[in-house]
View: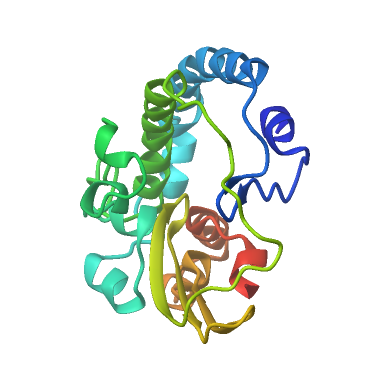
Length: 233
């Protein structure tokens, strides 16, 4: 949070990405702080795996719980960790590369039923843990290669998008975040539709928890990684 506050000026609701660029340029001090954090955090991931991921009690409470299969993922339109936890190697940054991702090397972790059933809570957990390693790897490749120049292009106070429509999606921590925007040429969008991964993920809760123990609800809900503010959109 300290690093994000340094970049954006806010501890919550960063709003760092702006039309035409970012709100503030990154400083040398921020770059050094990011590098220091990466050096601290990367070995911690292995420690967390030892203490939690492969802890017998944690494994027993998450394996064979909240199992979801590929067909159900497709039915609900699930993406991200929910889909990768079922063994499907699908990541927009690899399959439909955007931004700088064509030039970045990273792997896409998937579930394998390593501790229980393919697509269970433990599979989703371990995918997230391994993705943190890949995130560190990505940042290390990019942190010293940030291009110089203006951090934001010249954008007027009133943005008028030419008449037409656009659909865009990005890979986010909880799945694909997509926007469909229609413009009639005015300063206000004619239509905006947001596809929220959390909304889709929580839609599966009824199916995942039928007939299970109440105690399993905690692990299952946690494995969906829901942010209710995003669900509400």
